[in-house]
Image 1 (cartoon, helix red, strand yellow):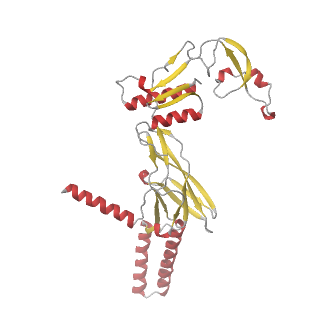
Image 2: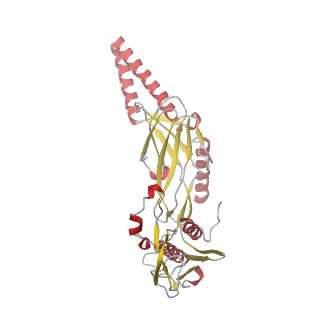
Length: 334
């Protein structure tokens, strides 16, 4: 009986939110905040002001004060004008999502959002934040014909895709007697990588070169100077030669080239991890190894179930590997 009652309440609340407060599912692209999506009620200051007007009106009646009536009606007219201006300060704005950079599980996910004011009036003191954040933490002023970018953050949980929470916009400009607000569900998401394992074991290097090996090159004998290539360790840069170059005139960075020695073979194989580790620990260890290999400029290959990435280095390779680890075992959304 209680379960049925709770289900009925949830359905009624969802219907009320959808019909009354215009709460919607994810809204792709740019969203227009029409007047029907803006709600307004008196604030605490507005209720106190209404009580004061009532006292003035009663006093003017009792003492038959013409100036009392004039003051009361003039103040009430100012309150009505404030109500209209407060609603118009929020309505007719255009809202659009921006970029969201990937984060590691447990870090703050940051979503870039844009407020476009294509009207002829400046908008002031627009507060907004995710509903889950409680009190709004961000405020924006948007000039006529301009835009204002904002960066909203929320905690990330498990790995995978994290959809942006619902956004609440509000304002009390200009006098603070009324509180206007509206809702927006941006079509934005951020990819959450597995959190790197702390104190992860050493990289599973195979071969004779060991730690100092660079991008497929040995370390035994100095063979000369060559143009810098992405992935070359910083310690291999030929600083004396670089000091003689003027990079503003087209000079390129150069690095030392070594020959001899056996390059390390770095294969990150998910199936080779100990079987007693749970799935998330395995993914965290693989994440830590990917970051460590990039830091040491060691080309690495990754095998994750049916997915295989050839040995490489760079941001693109790292991003592809971390994305595969984040979405492992989950439905992939393009």
